[in-house]
Image (cartoon, rainbow, N blue to C red):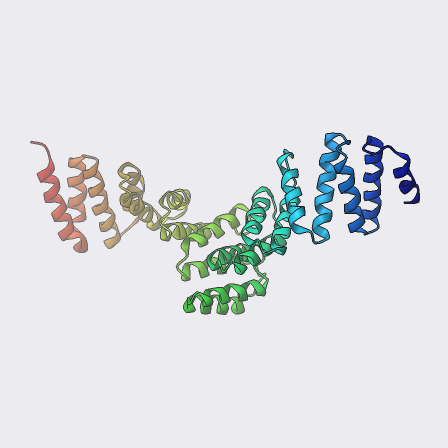
Amino acid sequence: EAALLKLVNDTSAGSYDRAVVLQTLGYLYSETGDYKRATEQFRAALDLNALPEDVTHNLRYNLAQLLIADGEYQRGIDLLNRWISNEPNPDNNVYVLLATAHYQIKQYSKTVENIRTAISRANAPKEDWYRMQLAAHLEMQQYDSAINVLETLLTLHPDDKTYWDQLGSLYSRQEKQLTALAVTMLGKRLDLGDDDTVMRLSNMYRYLNIPFKSGQLLQQALDDKVIASNFDNLEKLADSWLAAREADRAAKVLEQIRSQDGSGETDLKLARLYVSEEQWQQAEAPLSAAIDKLAGDKKGNALLMAGMVQYHLENFSRAEDLLKQAGQFEQQRNQAAQWLRHVQQSQPE
């Protein structure tokens, strides 16, 4: 320090040499924890405008960190934003630092904006980042957004009972008492950290009539190989997408598993989905398989549906044949007769 202070006086005012000495003094004070004096030296070095641009750029970042560490949050934020504008690929920690500074001066929307940027850019966002986002949403009384963050935290840390309690509290605050009770009770009942946690959480989402969240959770768990890619789990995934009215996603899963089901139930479920979406050609194959596998009234239902599909495909002769077969089943008799008359009347002269 003594040598550097002497060098300050030995260098010309405004010179590159003095800027380097001031910069070095700043690093020295920073290493000893004297952030106030470090800030003064870095600012003095920058004010000379004598350092190369790359050195100035790095020094500006160091000064912004020190300003924030010393409680000069707004000045640190302004300097960091200036630094980011000249940095082609800022590190995620920069956005976390910005979010932290904004939080300290109660600029919560800016906190959320910056922490979301860090999360979106990271392969494995840190738990603390989500916690900061959660805190900012709570400060702004944005309870729906806070619930979304808590649900993310629960999928990442299902063994943390604090998150379960917070989620139940937020549902209760929104006067969703049944939902709050279900979350609270499930949180207490779960052997959190057990292998079937994902499946239990998925069941909770379906029970609370949030099937899209169930589908998201199951798909992620399958992708990450947390749960087995077996028929039962894939069927639950398909049922979640069906309940969420995600037809394309449900159809993809059902197509994947229908060959594993010898009962014909999955074929019929897939066929119903295609019929509801008026995808007549896609419905043909699963309906044909269902007719071969099913028996009783379920087979009659598959025949009736197949007749309707062939009618829409304008295969009138085939439609008549299938509807006549459907008419042999008691539960489908009346409806099959109505469709048969409709088909016969619709045929060209």
